[in-house]
Each structure stands twice: as structure tokens, then as C-alpha cells.
Image (cartoon, rainbow, N blue to C red):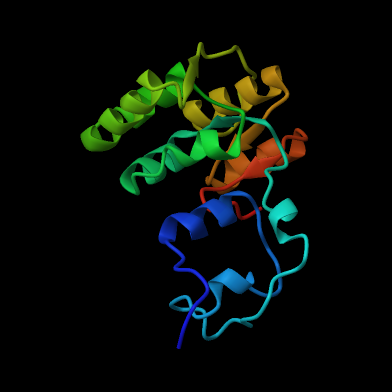
Length: 171
């Protein structure tokens, strides 16, 4: 068998973060491992347009940042969004406890300009953890989307009208 293109995990993560949900895989993905159970074949004609993020600016919570750091995929944020932010509270959560390697990767991304750090804005006493509350408040302040995996945080952000993206772009 021959394949049009080798698809890497990074390609797949990038497509999922961008929210691609086509019913068939793009033609360049035919034969990609683990695709046998899915319907291979050409994707929709406008699949590349559907890969564009629905928001330009996002505020990220600790969970997705730690996951992307573990995957060495923090560089995907500036590829998807014009600006990615985190709050000081989220940074403290990312660097607490035993996530030292991830903290180093996140601080490197900040130094490279891939992530920005904002002061933690004032917010109501929401029933989510402090990092999620600060990320939601910052997203509201910036009229931005939010990258968050926590179910309660995603629910609150959705109720507040924020576009929500999970680590893999699942809405």
C-alpha cells in the first residue's frame, strides 16, 4: 500500500485542537494507523477551512497546559491562536508539586512568547477551583475563548457564553 502522506501525532492533535470533526478523514490520512475503523476517504472539500480555530485569543487552564507540556506540544498554541494567555494563578498551579518538567516547558514557552501571563483578575466566588475561576475571569475580560478540560469549569464557561476548547479540541 502507498499513502499520500505520513500523518504524525502532531498533525492529529493540531486537527483536533482546531476542531475538525469531519465524517471522513482527509485523503492525506488514508491508511493512518488506527483509522481502519473510521471511514477512510477524502475529507470534505472545505476541510482545511474547518480546521481554523473559532477564536483568535484563548486563556488556558492548568490541565491542558500540563498535558500539552507532557506531549511537548505547547508550540501548537501559537499555531492555532493569535495569542494564548494564562493567569498567574494557573502558572502557580502548573508549577506546584511534582510537575517540575512540565513547569520548565511552560516557563520556556512563556520565555519564547508562545504563552503570555496575565495578573489574576477579580472574580465572583464561582464553585470551581481558583485556577479555573481565574482563567474564566481572564477570558471574560479579554472576550477570549478558554482552553479547559474540567467538566464543571467548562460548564460554567459555557453558561457565561465563552467558547470552550478542550485539550484535543472536543467541545
